[in-house]
Amino acid sequence: MTHHYSIFIQWSEEDQCYIASLPEFGSYAHTHGATYDEALQNAKEVLTLLMMETMPLPHPNTYHSHQAVIV
Image 1 (cartoon, helix red, strand yellow):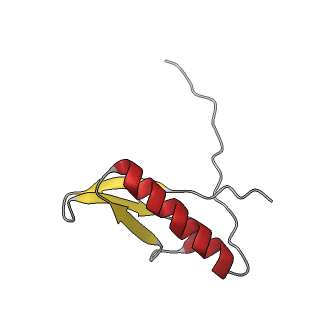
Image 2 (tube, one colour):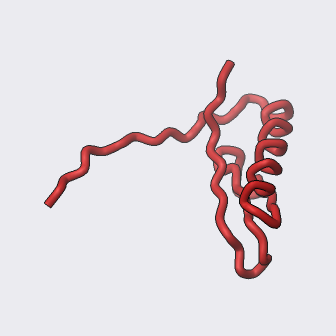
Image 3 (cartoon, helix red, strand yellow):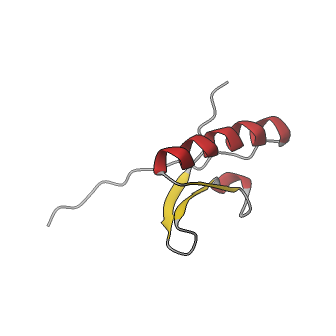
């Protein structure tokens, strides 16, 4: 079974590191890393743990494209 969960990564000036959020799992599902790649790797590990421990699993957020209007 394939799951398509979101990982949102952004730089934190306050923490001086990248913060990775896992929005489908709630506001406290975060990790961090000194580099973007480290934050992504940590987020993947946390996501794996959350998927093993969370029942029922939340529905993934999905992107729905909208036709762009060119002016």
